[in-house]
Amino acid sequence: MRTSIRPPAARGAPRALLAVTVLLAVTLGCHADAPSAVGARPDLNERFRGEDVDVEQYVDLFESESREIAACRPAIAATLQLRPGMAVADVGTGTGLYLQPLAEAVGAQGTVWAVDISEAFVEHVRARAAAEGWSQVRPVLCSDDSVELPPESVDVAFVCDTYHHFEHPQATLASIRRALRPGGRLVVVDFVREPGSREWVLDHVRAGEEQTRAEIEAAGFRFEDRPDVPGLTENYVLRFRR
Image (cartoon, rainbow, N blue to C red; front, side):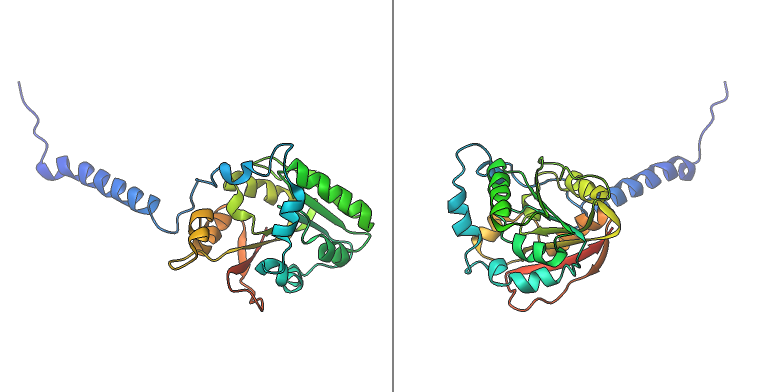
C-alpha cells in the first residue's frame, strides 16, 4: 500500500493561517475602542421604579444649580439647534429639568417627547406640563431597552446624563435610531470618566467618552462634532447624525 506523505509546508500552512486568524479575532475583539455589549447595572435604575419614589427629593437633587447640567442648561439646550415646529425627544427626562427650554424652542406647534423609565417621573412631568400649559409635551413611559417612540417621529434625540443608565445600550440606541427622521440628530451629554475622576463617577458611570462614542457609532450613527459649551468641566457634549 502506498502511503501519501504531505510535505511539511503544506501540512503547517493551514494551521498557521488558523492561528493568525484566531489571534487577529482576539486582538480586534479586545481592542479598547471596541463597543461593549455590557450596559449599566440594573440597580442604578431600580430606585426610580416602583410606587414609593419620592419625586420631590429628586426635584431637589436633579434641578439644583449646583449640578453642572442645571447651571449650564441654556448653553446645553442651544447645542440642539431646535426650531419652532420640530420634534425633540428628551430621553431620560427625569423630573423635567429641560422641559421649559425645549418646549420654548419648538413652540406650540412642535413636540417634546418626555421619555423616562420611571412611572413616577412620567406622571410628575405630565402634571408639570399641564400646570405650565405646555401642550406640546408628551410624556412617554419607556422600557429598559427601548424609548417606545413611533418610527421617524423625532428630529432631535437628547440624552442628558442618561446614557450611562442604559441597561441595554445597543438595543436602546437602535430604538432611538428608528425614532429619528432621516438626517435627525442625536445629542448626548455625559460625565467625563477618566483617571483622576471623582470616585462617584468611576463607580457610577460605566464608560468614558471614547467608549461612548464608539458604541454610538457602532449603532449606525455618524459622529458630527463635540461642541464646546461654556461652564462644562465634568460633562461633555457629543453630536451625531442618523
